[in-house]
Length: 154
Image (tube, rainbow, N blue to C red; front, top):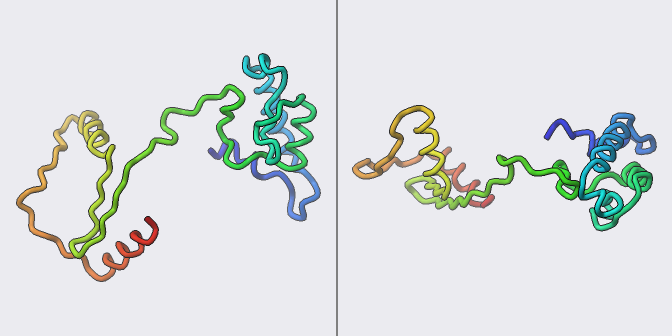
């Protein structure tokens, strides 16, 4: 979420001066938060600083002070504790199992069939795949090294 990259770019090298861009972004955050029903009903803003991690309800002034002093908690690009909803295309979970064997990597993705169906619908073609009757493809050494590396990562 590059439009909120300012959230994690707080100080200039040397670590003493808070960047103007960060201060402007914090003001934008506080203004947004104050306009949300959840903040109005809770009587203050859940402080998203590293120390409070949205567990403490504070005044706008305290939130600004906390954020300028220690910064935002990790990975808080979507302000979900402040009334913002996550976009529908973020955090889609995939069930991926990779099996490395002499015949190559075979990936099974639980949502692949659905994705394949949607792409086929969009293109107006039948994208079904019948896996029978094909000869086994033996990967080269470079591919085998890649598969071994992927196995370590999974």
